[in-house]
Image 1 (cartoon, rainbow, N blue to C red):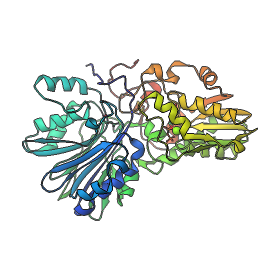
Image 2 (image 1 turned 90 degrees about the vertical axis):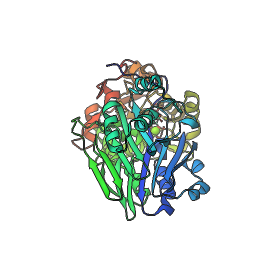
Image 3 (image 1 turned 30 degrees about the vertical axis):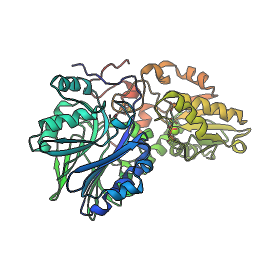
Image 4 (image 1 turned 180 degrees about the vertical axis):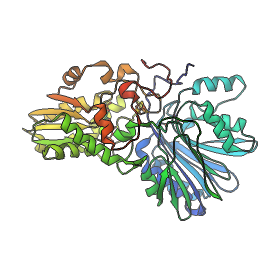
Length: 464
Ligand SMILES: O=P(O)(O)OC[C@H]1O[C@H](OP(=O)(O)OP(=O)(O)O)[C@H](O)[C@@H]1O
Ligand SMILES: NC(=O)CC[C@H](N)C(=O)O
Ligand code: SF4
Ligand SMILES: [Mg+2]
């Protein structure tokens, strides 16, 4: 079967979702705000909330950061017992207000709210089928296909309808759904995207990452299993496990870059994985140097591990403007390049006349690394050795991350030696795939497709 991707020229990345079922309607919006704020790193284009106000599911969403969209007035305005929230980085569909989430559809039986992290690889063909049968779409996202199918096929038993839909959709998804009665979380069969369950005295929480459960004042209970559906209502939490076997394939990039270091994903702490990756990288590619420093923020835990393993001092060679956005998830190249310059500056006094090791978590397009090496050299460093705490990105991702076509991936188009020349470093080494997997210190299996081309399911065109 041939699956298509709606918007394959676009860059792909992440989103964050949260959900809440509470006996404290007065604080529900505030809790969603806290949860989304903790997940801001997963998407910075738009934010939104949907909430059951008692009469109906109302929503508020807009372009911008969580604090810009969920202003104190908005938080004050909405009270309710069930709520979901979303921060977006677009994968399918433009970065525009219309495509912001949560999506809310009204139909014969009531309303359904939905927030999606991931990307569906067969959304295009499903959309065609629906459009041929007269369905009108309000957005250009893949997520609306699911909202539409639910509204169309749900005959009162939403859980069965969701289950049926998961048999049809292909790709990566962590969904939170809400009706006027329940909150529902669903994770795809491979568990490509994370989703976890938490508890507060007044109810239950769902979130993409455990850091959001803590931010919402909750206690982490467990990860949702691949293929599992959890239904939360007045009777508590019910789990519907999948009888379809698929090997767990959490996206390894969640550990390398996306997730927050204080999150645990499927039982593995992100900081520890990054720290271990630095230690293993040091064993695989040591270098004699005066100083190790990171490209902040995501390179820092690996740099600490690298420095400790080789007993080289770790310092701050680069200072990050804390108000700058993540560059990797900016939606176009011009903004991304400008982002690097406004975001990082070199501490000349620290790097001057030194042989330094520069650690970053990943190189995708190479924009960041090339600019940084040149900045560090201009600041007077004697030698700059680059160490990357993940293997070269050689393949596109179709499951919701920001890897462009293969022709824009430096790891797919240049040899290691050519990359060294391109970024003008004195040496460069990437962590091996084995080293990366070992750094998670777990028996979990991971999706490594953008590193080795081994996709967990059929994708549109591997060589794209
Ligand atoms: O090779 P490139 O295409 O240039 O992109 C890779 C860089 O982008 C990311 O950092 P980013 O600045 O987005 O976020 P961070 O501050 O969280 O590390 C990543 O950690 C790399 O540093
Ligand atoms: N990054 C994501 O997870 C985005 C979700 C969805 N595919 C969208 O584009 O809105
Ligand atoms: S292809 Fe790469 S980025 Fe995409 S889900 Fe797999 S590991 Fe993650
Ligand atoms: Mg970075």
